[in-house]
Image (cartoon, rainbow, N blue to C red):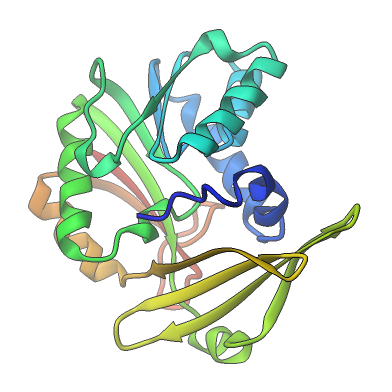
Length: 242
């Protein structure tokens, strides 16, 4: 699984070039208000969403990530903001999630699910999450729906994600449409920092796995404004209940 070890200190700069960077943050801050803690963020990374949740309202968060360097960045941010006492950070692979206690709310933001390469790992993750929820607990995650015209337009081209203070971060994408896989190469000042595969899936496909695990689908949105999922929706946001 991708860890982002090499780009951890540049992660926020890199990801800020994504048009959904702030939109996803605001969505998950709003969703978290509905649930009592401890709530759980899978793929907490640099804790940029967790920090905003804690600034918005008092709660307790368990943050899980597989990457030690990303957790270190998250710990640093939370400590600087005086919020670390509200967060338990755990280094775990979420396909084998084992929390110290079950939660009423687990969320996986910013397309983290796309790092799982196949149905076996996706099913394992969904099952592990299900097992760590209280009865009637909720799991929320999002992913994009591939825009093939966009993919054809950007394939093989360098895309600037961030530029400032002597730092230029670029992405280059290559697509394997048949296998629903994108290879991403991330460069900082023309030096390769990360190179990884990222996967997408159709809503009907992931719906089958969700139902196999036993989740009840409360809602599926096509965008972060909570509009209904349609054939031309750019995103899929799943609101699930145990």
